[in-house]
Amino acid sequence: MRNGTEGRRSGAPSSLLRLLGPGLVTGAADDDPSGIATYSQAGAQFGYGLCWTMLLTLPFMAAIQIISATIGWQTRRGLARNLAQQQPLPVLYGLVALLAVANTINIAADLAAMAEALRLVVGGPLLVYTAGFGLVCLAAEVFIPYHRYAGYLKFSTLILLVYVVAAFSVEVPWSRVIASTVAPVLVFDRAYLLTIVAVFGTTISPYLFFWQASQEAEESRMSYRSALGDGNRPTEYGFSDISTDTWIGMVFSNLIAFFIIVTTAATLNANGVTKIETASQAAEALRPIAGDLTFALFAAGIIGTGMLAVPILAGSAAYAVAEAFGLPGSLELPVGRALGFYSIVSAATLAGVVLAAARIDPIAMLFWTAVINGIIAVPIMFAVMLIISSTKGRKAFAIPRWLVALGWLASLLMLAAVGLFAMSSLG
Image (tube, rainbow, N blue to C red; front, side, top):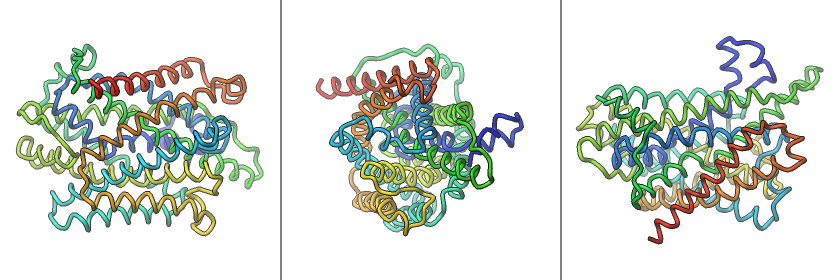
């Protein structure tokens, strides 16, 4: 839990660790198994040719996440409740419904990848693993209070470091990697454009906006209550804490994605393997080429990131739906006081289990998740930017102008990505 302005008063590492929270966890959740599959396919199909996307998307995803987080912290309400004050209810309900559908499909894809990764390592029944992972993720959200659960989520982000180790366990031509990152050669064919759209949609996802805004609202409410309980004046809004936390989280997220692209490019693409359908297939394909260590690291990362991402996908859907319909909802509340909220968490997770168990084509699940995320990201991002760009918003949130400009550019970037997707699909 972030404690007011304490993080800014000291440069000690312990102070930095205390202020890390929703931003770091949100960034780590962006590299979920379905994201790993997308980045692996980018590396396998185009080698190092899409490394530049991680550099390009970083400032834009950081900007929209900081803005969403600021809205949550300042208002002590999640994003859906803030959007409800600006958008007609039918529009809000439509966006929230699409978010819930996309998250459920994403949960299914992640659970399927986790189960397949575990089966690759130890063998055994896929259906049991799928159900087991789903039930463990659900139990963690339902029975562990947020103030403890947040600490577990923060610790679990360390699992992503296995992809850095994996990249350095194989031979990589770093001069080519650097050149492709800072001076890319663009190719305007359908497959290349579709992959760029998939990478953008995976990296800048709507569920991350809703999750971080809701978690900042949780942190703000707890800090406020804690200060009042101690007889103190509630701490002032700490924009620098949120900004630092979020920048670190987004840099961490894109750095991990960068190393996934590099690892798969150096192994799979370099050996003629150019088609990857799931994250677990990426791990399996690595074993004969890069050895058991790289395979084991990739498989462990798929399971670990899934355990982090599935609760966040279900939780962000629950926050959005509960806020849209005025239901009490918080991971800090016991089940008896937020039955509707936890029912939504359960429904999203269990529906994901059913979809994963049904053995629906994993490519179809990833494809439709990317399509829905890309479509709903655009109106949500523009709506968020309208909140903070209004006269009232500028006074209330005091967000720097350069950050507002980056937020608008991020919205235009996603609009362009969806436009490219539409044109390449029709072509």
